[in-house]
Every structure is written in C-alpha cells, then in structure tokens.
Image: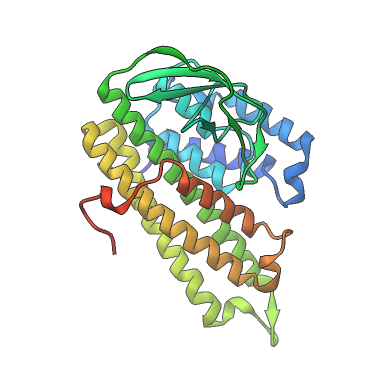
Amino acid sequence: MDARLSTEQRELREAAAKLADDLGPKSVLDLDDAARVARLEKAVAATGWRGLRSDGASGVEVAIVAEEFARGLVDVPFAGPALADALRPGTTPTTIAVDGVAPDARGISRALGLRDRTLETAPLGEPTVSIDLTRHSAPVTGPRTPAGEISAAHAKRWRALALVITSADLLGAARGAHALACDYAKVRAQYGKTIGSYQAVSHPLAEGLALIEGSVSVLRYAAWAVDELPPAEAIRAAQLAKVYCARAARTVCETAIQVHGGIGNTWDCLAHVYLRRVLAAADLFPVALEEITRGLS
C-alpha cells in the first residue's frame, strides 16, 4: 500500500475543502440560513460526488470527500446518497436507511436498504433535525419493496465502505473541532498571555493532534482495503478504524469545548456542533470491541 495521495486525490481533497469552506456554516446561526443551504445543495449536486462509486472511484476517494465535508460541517446529504449509490449505482437522490431510519435524508423522499443480500426501497416521512444539527433524519413510512440482490462479496465490501465513510466523518469533525480550538487558543488571553501559551491548554491540543494523525493512518489503510483486500479483511480494517476514530474524535471534541472554557458550553459556540456530529457518526454502523479480535488499549 502506498499511503500517499495521488495528484488527482489531492485535487479532489482541495476541491471538497474549498466547497466546504465557501458554503459550510461559519456559526450556529448559519445552520438556519435556508439560502445558504440551497446554494450548498446546488453546489454539492453539481459535483456529482454522491455518485463517486458509480464513476469508479475508490474507497479512499469517497473517504476524502466525507472527511472534508465533516470538517466543514457540510449540512446537506452526502454520506447517505453515496452509500445508496454504492449499493445500487445510479440511485441518487436516494439515501440509505438503517434499522428503519434514514440518517441523512434532507430533501430526499426515498431510501434504499440492505437486508442480508436483498436490496429494498421504501418511502420516507418528513425529515427532522436529529442530535446531529448538520443532518436531517427521516423514518421509513411505507412498505419496503424488493429491488434485487447483490453478491455476498458486494455486501461485505459495502459494509466496509459504510464503516470507512463514518470513520472519515469522525476524523473530519475532529479536525474541524481541533482547528476551532487552536484558533481560539491563539487569541483568547488570560493574565496578559494567550491561553495557548499555557501547558494546561497546549498539551491537550498537542495530544489531540496526535490522535488525529493516528486516525489518518488507520482510516487511510481501511479506505484502501475496501477495494484492495479480501472482503473479510476489509471489514476488519474498517472496524478497527471505526473504533479508533470514534474514541479519538470524541476526545478531541471534548477537549475543544474545554479549551473554549465557559463559552464552549453555550449554544453559540460551534464546538458542540462538532461533538454532536461525532456522537451521531459513532452510533451509525456501531462496532463493539468484542467484534475485533485484536484488542485496543
């Protein structure tokens, strides 16, 4: 495995980051800006990235977009439609349903689900904001209609991809929260010095960066494994990535809130939006330590 990104992959990362930075929310109030959301939806739809797997993209490339979108708190669907497209190419703007709920359903009326190896489609109810303020979830409200079957290998690789996308979402949110905390530590002053100059603040931020770097390594391998390793090994790598990234991202986001001090516990601080996204992503396609034979400390 070559851990370096190719020229095309670096360009994809830059394009996804620019879109997120230009149109993603800059404050909690921006989450309610319908005009901004409409512009963001139009821009994301125009990229065609929700159908990356249909276009032959690798797991690494899908993870790149998911990570940058989470870092920028992109609040229109990507993960759900991308996973639906990976199950049955050309299904956008369908999203994915898990246990009777579509967790990424803003502006989408139909979902695709997987039962063993059987694909099922179903209508969705009205989307509502969940604990993750950047996503709308919707319940499956109508009968499930069979939509064909996929191979066992395809089902396993899709499961690995689902874990990789949620792990990328965790990593991206951790990066965003860490950057938010570092920026604040550079300007907030106490006793005549910026708080970032004190070890009580700088050391936790440094530890957070180490966790982020570890997450990058474990995720990059899992994303590569989706297409390059046997399905069982790909799932194993993705499970390890999910557990590591979930633990790391929660720690980084909680540290970001602590660095902000009192304001970090208010509604107006974006830190809690990152934490909410992390908590929701950790619960989507959850992995128990018992499923992994190689333990984590």
